[in-house]
Picture: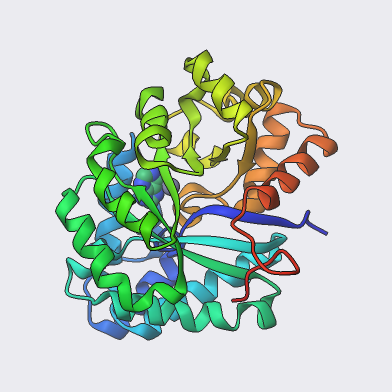
Length: 319
Ligand code: ADE
Ligand code: ZN
């Protein structure tokens, strides 16, 4: 029995497995520049975040209809449930779809169909987090939040993702303030490739409640002290960090040192179709590489529920 856990850092578009990509490409008449799934998988050799993002955005061309987004989310939920996930807070990137002419309503309603029945069908409660692409303009983020207004009953919070370096959090001060006034929860990727000062800025300027990655936090002792004191959760993604070369190998991952420093760490999968494993695979791999004990793994699983935006009497959002 896998440990029950919550997954808090998962891009739904990053769960697009090659088999589903080819199926949707055929259904939608989209030509992919790969002969087959094997050739596509061979392209999953990344030098850094940007080299991954280039492929990640281009493969999204196959996602066009509500049915496609429903199929994507359903496939993720099946895999997540099998790896012990009981609650998933799921990122999506509306600008990557609206830029291709796919309306945000198609994305949210399609994903929503799978999420609505997830608790009953898979025993997984869910929440959606709308992410802004930080390499797009602040105006585009504001327009995206505006376009999302009719769908806010389905959206628990906002996040910030895509190419980090050169796009510091403060660029998105205004849209985070608007989201806050709408009662949305706030997270942001920070310190994945960018410096620890981006983590500090995400806390100070955006008011984030949880930091996605936060991998480089240990470089700044004052920041570590603050994160520990304020119990700010970090959503770490060990297999992602190796595949995107943020760490040289899993045995060099700072997770153990971060836990020892008293940080509230969680383990997540980020883009599991691209990085070699879902969240349970991340627990297994990092546990093995760092020699984590069963108790350490239990702490990480417990942290995932502590760090979740859970609500309601049972501590779990409906969905
Ligand atoms: N979008 C999807 N995966 C991402 C990651 N690891 N970092 C930033 N943006 C992303
Ligand atoms: Zn991410």
